[in-house]
Structures are given as structure tokens and as C-alpha cells.
Amino acid sequence: MPALDEMLQRVALISDLVGKAPTGFGRTALMKCLYFLQTVRRVPLGYHFRLYTYGPFDPDVLTDLSLAERLGAVGSELQRFSGGYRYELGRGTGGGRLSEGARDFLDRYQDDIDWVVEVFAGRSALELENASTLVFTDRSVSERGERVTLHELVRKVHEVKPRLATHVIEKEARRLMEHRLIAATQ
Amino acid sequence: MASNPHRTYEIRCPVYGFITISDWEREIISQSAFQRLRRIRQLSWTDYVYPGAMHTRFEHSLGVMHMATMLYRGIAERSRDILRSELAYNDAGLQRHEVLIRLAALFHDIGHSPFSHGAEELFPPISDDKPTERFRHEIYSAEIVRRYFADVICNHPANTNYEFTAEDVANLLEGKPEAGKALFWRDLIDGQMDADRMDYLLRDSLHSGVDYGRYDWRRLVQTVGATPETTGAGLRIGVSEGGWHAAEGLILARYFMFTQVYFHKTRVIFDHHLQNALAEMLPGKHFPRPTEVELSEYLAWDDWRVLGQLAAGAGGEHGRRLATRDHYRVVKETPEIPTADDLERLSVWRQTIGELLRAEILADKSWYRIGPADIPVISEDEAGRVSPLSQYSSVVRGVEAVHQIRLYVRDEDRAEAHHRLRTLGE
Image (cartoon, rainbow over all chains, first blue to last red; front, side, top):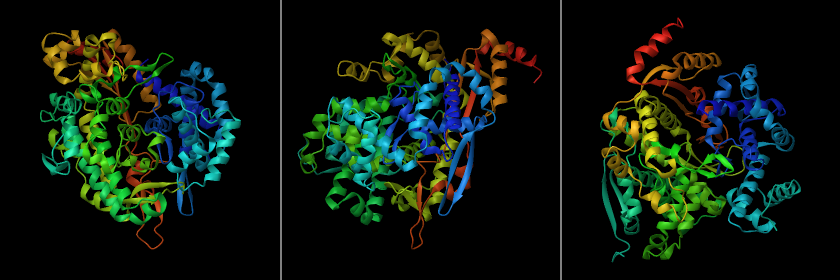
């Protein structure tokens, strides 16, 4: 499949996801939801997420988002607030043609998109950074064939995000365990 | 092993004048897996368009280490207090991580395939059940460090004080959580203001003979520092208010270098010819995997081997085109920033050109990532407020990603392709 067509499939998925997400869905939320879709639900998006202090990140997501905006599949609105601003994403008016071209792809992963919207799309950027860093760390441990205690997992994440209180990380870890999204913890 | 582990050496550099290396780093550079970078050109076949662009990953790797060190020292000096309070660094800890960052910078490109990015499409899939996920050169870099540099990293006398392992360097290169608080420094290796792009813009510009990649790097080195994230969750590398125009200049330099050099219409088609020629040479049409068994075979691939095979007539039709500079010619291209209508027009062009179409090349890149990776700018007032660069700069807010698609045909088919396209009446 030509690189452009693969990109247009991802753009269609981004448009669909953004359209289903609640108000206030921004760029961090999009990045983390796509991370969960690829990593947890194994949707073949072809991204390569690496860990930063702000959680798993792949710049290609924002390149795709840029094309989605350009094609009118995603709308982006600047929201100003005291001390800063953010972009809020919504479905654009030009997404229809794109979705038709990627209909099979979207249909195949509709349940996964609905799942990520239900579990993660309504959460704050900070919560999503915490949750995705926990999942990334857990998977990294698991890939090495190791297991860790919950306490050790929290300590590892705290080392990456030292400004996040350990009880906040632990609470999120327990929530992820309830959803069976953490595998390496004893 | 060298007799004086604390001796330093100077290497001439066309960008910075001199680069100082330690005896330990000299030992690392002397390893054959590192010397291989002398045989991998930084910009693939770019010299077919810009004849001066014959430099290698070797000098770039040294340059990245030098630039990362300047940035690191600037941050450590200006942000000592916050590094102490937030990340529990003391002087010894800062000295220790400076050594680690230098090593990560030195090794960051050790896993490149022949002709650098030109042949990355030939990296194998990670597994059969993940056909869309391919290995990347960063994964090769980390595995090469683990398997080929463990001894020289661990057992050099200079490591007595630090006790680094190859795993420490590899984890940082891969962005693994095991890197711990050293991940804070990862923005220097792979970020929007990292030492890699700060070096390659200057170096590629110099060797290509263009000025597009120049920006005020000295000002950036003077203004870089550590700052709390705008979300408040962690610590980031940013610039003080006096440096945001220099950061803006870096973003624009990258935009110009990509549009004028890296995405040049003739330069990119040589990547296509290279991929196809190499596919004929490689068993299974992929590079060997970054595993214990196959990594030595991977390292045996460098530009010399490919050029030797090309000279011997290997690589099929595309090998011949590379050897004789007989490249495909562009007959149609979308605007750099296409609309939905432009993409529909592209479909019509494809159909019209029909069987004459030989290659479709997508050149896509974003210049600045607004969102979680936005570069923090620290205000110089008493409050020391932190705001993203995109809030300061309307230029970086406005510079849109490029997604240009070009259609290529053989030179001998060019007239017929244009004739067919004229029937569209555009």
C-alpha cells in the first residue's frame, strides 16, 4: 500500500476518534489514546512510541494530525485561559470523503476506538501522561520477562515523573490493574 | 587499553574547530563497529545534487557529542538549583550523567544502515504478527551498543568512578523507563531542540554549500535550561526568554533544509533507486535483524560494500540507474501542503499517467510539534513563568507540516506522460 494511503487510513481513524471524544479533547489526549490503541489493542498504526518525561510520544502522530487538519477531517480551536492556551480538537467538516476511503479499516477497529474513548478520552492530560507512562513501564518490564511489585512499578514511574506524587501514581496503577492493562505486576 | 585513562585528545571539526574526546571515548571510537560510520555517508546520494555533501555519520556523531556537551553544561550551570531540588542531583551526579549523555550522543547513529536514511524502508518487520512495525535504526543502535561495546564501556579504567554498563547507554537511546531520571536528558538526544538536529543542520548546510541550516546556536547554548513542565508533572529542557528567537531560528532552519535539500525532487528519487537496488542485493530483500545471530551480518553492510556491488553490476535496473545517474523524472507534484481537492486531482493524475508511472514519493514532515513536546520558555520576570514556545512565536504556530506527493516516470517516457496530462486541460 502506498505510504500516502496508509497515512490517510490513520488520518481517518484520528478523525473518527476525535469525533467520538468528549469536549476538551486535546493533543496530549490524542497522543495517549493512539498509544493505547496501538499498544494495548494492537491496532496496526505503525507508530514508534518512545518514553519521555511527558510519557510515550511519537512525533509522527502530530504530522498525521496536521494532515487531518489540512484536509478538514479534524478541526482545531485555540482555547485561551489565564496563563496559557491549548488546542481543542473536534471532527472537521471534511472528514466524510476520507472516512469513505478508509471504511474497511475503520469498521475493523471500531470496537477498539469505542473502547479507548470510553476508558481514556475523557481524562485530563496529566492523568493520561501518568496512565500511559505506567503502561509503557509495565510493558518494558514484561518484555524483559520480569515481574515487579506494585511498589516497584510506582517507584520506576516516579523516577521518570518526580513531580507526580507516589499516591497518585499508585491510584492510577490500581485503576489500570482493574482494567487488566498492567501485566508485569505481582 | 591506553596507559593514561585521563588523557584527552582533540579532533579537528569543520563546524566547531576542535572536538575534545577522552581516552575512554577514543577507545570506543577505535572499535570497528564505530569506524564503520566513516563508511556511511550522512546524506546518502545527496551529492548527486549538492556535490559537496560527501560527509559521513562519523563526523556527525562526534559533532552531536560536542553539541550535547555544550547544552548539558549550560543546563547544569544555569539550573543547578532546580536539578538539585527536583532530581536530587549533586555535583558528582551531574558529572556522572554528563559522561552518560556524551556516550549516548556518540552512539546515537551507530545503528544506521548504508546510506543512512536512504534505505530504512528495508529494515525487517519486528514480527510476523506486526507487519506494519519495522525495526528502526535506533533499535539497531541500542543493540549494537549492548553487544559490541559492553567491554569497552564497562572495563575502561575511567569507568571505575561511574560504573556504567552498556545497558545504561542503550536504555537511554531507546527511551526505556530503566533509564530512570536520566530520561530527563533525552530531549538532548531526541527532541525538538536536540543536539542531533542542532549539529546536522549546521554540518549538512556547510557541506552542501547552502546557508539554509544556519541559526544562532551559540545563543541557544547560552539560554538553555531546566524548567518545570507547563502541565506541572515533570521537568523539561527549555530556553530562557532571551533565547526564544534563536529556538525559532532552529525550527525555521530545519524547515528550509528539508524543503531545499533533503526533499529536493531529484535527491529523493535516488532513495527510491537505492531501496530497489539494495532489495536485489539483500537476502530476503531485508537487512538482517538486530539479533545476536544476525547483527554481525548487518554491520558488514556499509556504503563501500554497496558501492562495490554496484560497480560489479549488481542491483539490477535501479543499480544501473544509480551508477549512471539515470534517475526517474518528476512529472507532477502536489503543493507542499495539499488540500482534499489536491489529493483527488492526484488520483486523476495517477490514472492518466497509467503504466508510465514508476514511483510515487511522499515527502512529509512537521516542523514544530505543538502539544506535549512544545519547547518551554522561561520568562525572565520574578515569577519565572513557563510558557510554550508556540505561545511566544506566531511563526512556529503557523508553519504547517509538508505532505507533498510527487509522481515520477522514466526519462524516455517524460514527453508521453506530459502529453497525456495535457489532455486534462489543467
